Image (tube, rainbow, N blue to C red; front, side, top):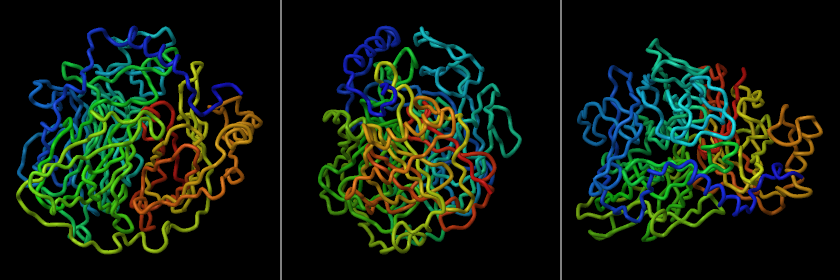
Length: 629
């Protein structure tokens, strides 16, 4: 068996060391000096409340500009500004409602939508300069200038390839939104400041060529969703550059919300990791897994510095009261295992698609890129002056990577309890979500079972050069064709060494179970899958040249290893952790959460499903799917 057939990463320390030396000498500019995270003062930055909120320019119509600007992200005492890409528009204070005028920030202002009230948003691309990070034109990418794919030896960065660095394509995806494909902001819907457009570009209203108008129905349950860039092959660069923000859906008939903290006591928290240069700029280190294949792409980016809501290692002064935190893992690849330093509980009330079946108290939360947790934390019984740290213990890569650095990535932020009192936790109803009554999962018996495989393609250096869903590249023929209104079971085997957070556009789904299986080696499911596809004439290794042949995983399951979703996963999900050596079952109904048809035609165009480790998504771990009548 050739090495590139094997999904697990090899122990190739020498090869990786050589690659890093090549990257440092050949690719990283001499002038770039990485900022030592140990020199960054902690707890100087302060989160004062929820972010600003977008304001419509006319009833239910918003305009949002995407621009490049400088922002204070590092502590002010350092006197450094950071260049970011950010969303901006007319905004108001998130608590008082006072109009703030035009506000641009990273993360961007929050959208506050109301269930049943559709809105239109015009996104305008005003990014006129070359990209601040190295665009890798050897990937499947937006390619606005239709440049040929270069071959080794590659140009060092800077300057890289001028035709790849400019113009910058953007595509704004409403992650978790139930929207028509034409407004989904998928990878091929990109557009540039000078009017170049992807093959799925769409605008709901006539507009300038550097803009697009999207329609968001807001017909789904109240939930914490978010918007971020999704340009093909460039998502990691644009998101690390700053293009992300919260989108909250509220419901005027939501009885649970009346028992939850509001106003200044309801704060979204976007957790992201970054690397800085000593001039305050972001660094996106170029450490390619194989510099002879992809000059500027690596399998995972892990920052050595943690920021929350665009502030590095902030503090938040809290009242002696209960707070509602809507937590987003907005990082590229880093998982966080969150806990509070004094052992306090998180009361988890919701995940991506809205409220859980029931509230649950836990002392730690494992969150992967793209996931959200809606939690209540009660500071009402703590003495004034008490300091509580939000800590992290997740290795990187997860689950078998390097441990957190106790001086840097082990701590996220600090809460400092003040003297002012407030409301404690209000008792919540036993059942939070009427669409989750009964035994979980409560979706109907699936009409279709889909057996799928996650895999990595290894290069000559025993390092990943590509990641795939079911052995297929992004531009292969569409093989997932669910029928509108039906329920399917997606049975996804993970023989790789990483946990992959898998995200489906359009739908919210339910986690059924996980089970260990014979993943690799002689007599394994992966070997049988390889053999079946080789026999079918699909080639000698992934990526397959024809439709993937599925192999039933049932004979390879390890008896007695089933695990069922914990209470914190008993809700509507759009992103789910799929662990190495396990099969994960998810149940997906291609309809609204209550089973009714979508208020739009989901059969127009296509959606995507992908790994939300964005480095993986940008290198083929993404597939199209279409809903059929």
